[in-house]
Every structure is written in structure tokens, then in C-alpha cells.
Image (tube, rainbow, N blue to C red):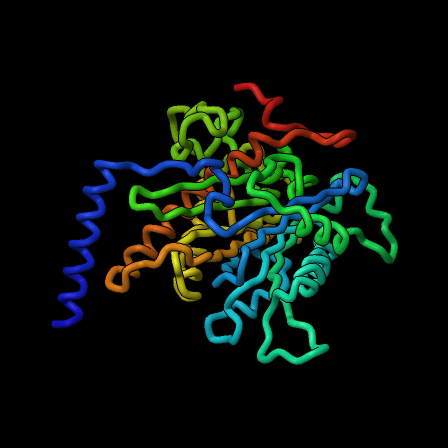
Length: 364
């Protein structure tokens, strides 16, 4: 009886909120960026000569977090620490980086900066014993984008991570910047994208993504984004979808000859709701649908497709309806991520000397 009453109460609450949503719809936050989530800033740094870079998502205090990996070729650091059965389950920063395995060193620079600030995990505080900053990281493959990768024993990623975390802002640059500097999305120039949504009852959900996918983000032989049904206003051109249907094996501008570990879309979802680690995990799982809405194909053996979720906990959730609210946040996360992916490619431009095509070069 208790379970039945709980389900009835939850359904009633959902119907009430649905009616309220129809009366007062939500929309993008002030910046249409992940930094619309209170308590977050973003830092980005790139090396134009190397054609690679780093993006850091920095909460102003430790944030509950989780991760979900769906691609067959991921590259990550400290993701096991976020498992709900382990000790930490929270982060001091999240790093997205180019550079394949070399890019994992970006977290070294971020961790060093956090350690100097005294920010990190500690079982106790003893003089002379540093804290341990928790900096989960995901990387994408941009080693073959034509940049100068002859770095010998000194890959630039530690320094790029340090530069990025030292210079974080509420305003987030899009396109050819940070971890997306050398990215390609299918056969088009990829990049950094971000988007946000604030619900009618005040919950904020944001996403930031570095899109470097095997799959295409546009319909075959067009410049129309697969994510078009989720566009708000003209945030990535306002072109809509063409009528018709998608052929089962027509991938359009996908990379024709993918190779293992040669791609990957990596992202971070954030919300101001006080989600616990299990709830963050569910949101990360649901957010993966945003990749499927915006990229065709997604989750291939050649992608990494790693999504972090973090919660800044500025907005307490009522205890009686947490499962329903988690579902709402997860659904919004998928939509927001799809929009961020399209914005990444829409805003990307070819850096000096890089071959290929950007979205702006396409014609229907």
C-alpha cells in the first residue's frame, strides 16, 4: 500500500507540474551556457601551433558527480573514483582535453593549481600533507589534424590545463577553442559547444561539449542539423529539418574511414539541483541520448562518448518527488546536449592552415 500511495502521489505531482509547465514555459538561461548553473565557471586554453587545447569546468566548491561512457574507444582519468560504491563521488574540477592519451596530463596542471588553493579531498588535515584534488578527465583524438605534435618529452597539456584553470569565466567561447580547437565532427570542423535550460520552476540544466565524432551532425547533402527539433530560437541557424526520412545506412558527412581511438565526443552536464551520486549517474545515462539526437551514428566502436554530470546543489529538491525530478533533469540534459553539439559545429571555423570544411561552407 505504501508503494502504491507513493506512485499515485508521484504521478499526481507530475501531472500538476505538467500543467504548470504549459502555463509558464522555461527557456535558455541568460548566457545559454553551462555557466548559467550557479557555482560554475569555465576556462579554456589552446596552442595554435599544436592545434589542440583544454577546457576546464570549475565548480566554486566540491560538487557531487558521476560519469557514463558509451563509446568503444574512451580515454579517461579518475572515472572509477565517481562510482557510487567508492569513497569520493565528488569532484574539484572536470577536464575535457584534446591530445589523446597525452591530453590526460592536462589534469596534472589543474590538480596542481587546486592543490595550491587547498582544494581537494582529505581524510584529515596535517601540516605539510597536501590535499588530493579530484579532477576526472576525458580526452579526444586530434593528433592527425595537421598541427605540430613533435613535442618530444614535453607535451603541452599540463601547461594548457594550468592556463585554463587560472583563467575561468562565466562567458564561454564556442567553436574553435579549448578542447575543440583541433576537433572534427564527421567530415566537418568540430569544436566546443554549450547550451542551457531553466525550467518554469527554476531548475537550471547546462551542457558543454567537445564534438569530435565519427558521425555526422547534419542531414546527408544538407546543412540542416539532426538536432534541429530541439533548437531554441536561431541558436544554430534556425534552418529546421527537411521533410522526408533518414535512409538506414546513409550517414552523410560521417568520417568515411574511422580508426580506433581517432574520434570521441566528450561532455559535461551540470545542474543546480542537489542530486546525489546515483541521481547524477542516471542523468549522465539519459544525457547520452543527446548524442544520438544530434550525431549519426553515435556510440560507435571508434568513439569515446564520455559524459560527466555534476550537481552544484544550490537548489534543494523535495524528498517526495526526487525520482520524477531526476527524470525531468535527465530528459532536459539530453535536449540541452543535442543543442550544444549543434552549436559547437555551427560556431566552428577552420584555424589557420587546417584543411577540410566548416559548417559555414556548406550549402543545401
